[in-house]
Image (cartoon, rainbow, N blue to C red; front, side, top):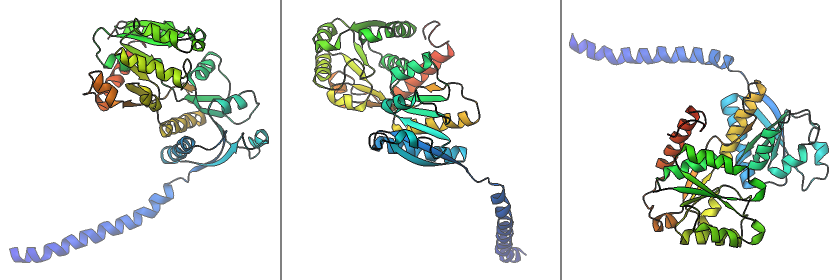
Length: 337
């Protein structure tokens, strides 16, 4: 009897496989019939010229729209530096969306009366702040620069003994002092602004470094742009064993120990999510900071300053945890963590 079972069992298994295959074959057409074709949209992209960063951003934007929101975007690239009739082309093909990449592109379209919504990406922090203070109908924006909170959270994550943080403040951005003071109090840090006038070639900034802080935050190019002056400031910061947390990977080569930045493809993903919210009329924040970020470490500087055991993953987890705590406690308006 057992030998008969052994002979029949493979046949039974084969029959089960055939039945399952037939069921799947019958079900697949009906399943495919219920899949909706993607919604087609036309997107006009305004930029000065094509760059590798722009291509990465747009590829991610298109892919996220299709994969996550079933929206298929066809792009028309308009380069205002090369095409004198760019303004006429903006709405010639009746686009569903106009994407402006960078400050200059946004400044060219902000005063135009356009029927299609404008999504400005890779804006600077100061332009984003202007939009937050003076909202514009039918204009949405994402900056590539990090919020001040994130820089302070990273400084806190280093567990520097008696940490004092500082930042370069020019007369044009004095309003940032209050923001940094509030964040420093929330994280039980002390803050000291380094008030400078960039036209003085950085000598004043170098003189103030020794009395400033143990960690200095270089969150944008606004005060000191790339060049010899900024590099000299960073070298002097290292000589005085001051940790510099900067805003882009390029500043690592000049002497920063850490950088906070967001990749263009992440900005593209965030832009796709924002556009889907525009379509569903569910936008809660039209002017956004990056939701994701990366950290890079200058290993040579870190080792010389005694931080050779720093791990990117551990730092990012600490920053994310501190950000969650801050938002849970009223965005830094309550007691320290």
